[in-house]
Image (tube, rainbow, N blue to C red; front, side):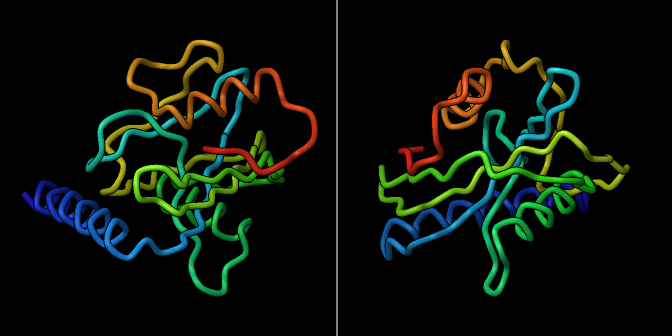
Length: 157
């Protein structure tokens, strides 16, 4: 009962935040993390949004991009990250968004049994054959990771 109530609150908060972003068009900065192990990447499915995504979220005031990536990995997955590498910076200015996303890669991490109400499911998938329903952004990042682009530069998410 408590879990289903919290999930409903997440869905409402997500929709209200979308409305706020559409009206105010604030500049937002976020992070995503590619957790890679044995040729597979860890993806998450949220309780409030359909599809599979790279774990991540927003950067809080006073936080560096790397600190945000580490915090989000811990909050969503209970993941303790080793060395992280900046993979790229992406922008999403489509559909009333003004969002900039730093994507990190980490192949040295440990997972705990920590459970988060925001995450319905997490699973490892082969990088070259992601699951049906993967988000377009996550799919694009996996393709780029498999065949990296030369030099880091700003790209459309």
